[in-house]
Image (cartoon, rainbow, N blue to C red; front, side, top):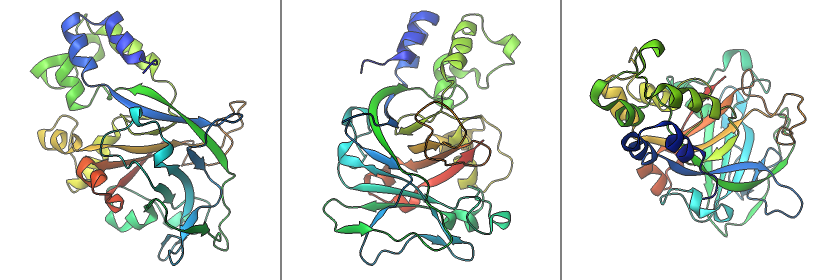
Length: 295
């Protein structure tokens, strides 16, 4: 991996012992961006999905069909950016109910509310399965298609996650108030925040959150919602079980950046985060993936 910004960050701003503990947490990932020229297309935002015969377009009963977000060709992804459990072939299709499609005022997807989970689906199509372009349901406008290429990168855990706190703070528990942050960590914390400014589309690795660890949001939902403070041991243990499957940021605002052409919008320019447990990923139980949205 040639792009290793978080390793460089640690080497520049942390004492050797802390730098070693921190870099042990880093994970490779696959970052997706608009394919250029004859670059291999590994994923597609928007457009029309291809489904096997007899497989219906996913819908949320009572609300309507789900919007097609993206397809990912697993065999085309660079393996160096993926966990061993990630499929080596087949196609992943991501769907979610999109505000603006139908009945949006009454349909709010929440990881905390199991009744809203049918508003999100991930379909896995095994390799060599005969498929045909699906007919978009009446009343549902597809997003414009954007072909995506891929590059491997390095990802880092959010500093609030238990493994990051343990690596940097030892057994002291919660992060202190910024003014009380240990002096040896202040340059690192400041540089870390400056480095993680772009969310983007990503497969695997550590999620890049808009606001706070997405792993805690899923863990809190699994534990039944309620009030679990960051750093509570049950929440920490559950959060550690979940890893990023895919994240797709909004591509709707007028912007000269060529990545932003799919006209997708998740809330107020938010990002979709699909997370899954490693055992479910290995067993291809993508119905167990959970979505959270941050704006």
